[in-house]
Image (cartoon, rainbow, N blue to C red; front, top):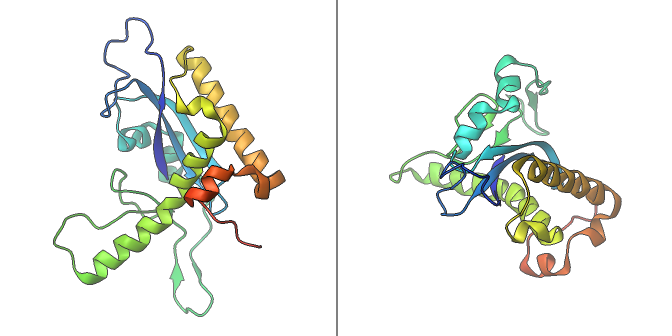
Length: 191
């Protein structure tokens, strides 16, 4: 799970409401991405001034997980293990630690085990960053400021995420742009 700032033209009379910490105007795309780079959940439209954790706090996903309405599978054992493990969403430190959300250990004076855990968690989080990178590389509208209203921008983002999923299912070997493959965003397995 991660967030991406989508550049927008600020709505009239909005002041600094949509200005993000990076210094440009945006709305936030909060997404949960699976291992195949498909968007499982998207929440788009919160003003860019709000942090990823703030977007999470207002999202329907948070409500569903908190209320137990997500149909997340029960804990199960991995092959070769006797103990059951929870199914989790991997996130960065902007998100809260919850039974179904795993985030890095905070701080700088961490044990070797905690550092290794954080490194491996960071590698797992790259999947969402890769999906955002491929989305932006394929749909060039994300490389510039979207010059329409916020409601129309939301529709553009949702349409692009839907098309991304469709193309990932339909033609995953040709969907990822060549320049993304050269930069190593993702290497498809032969499965």
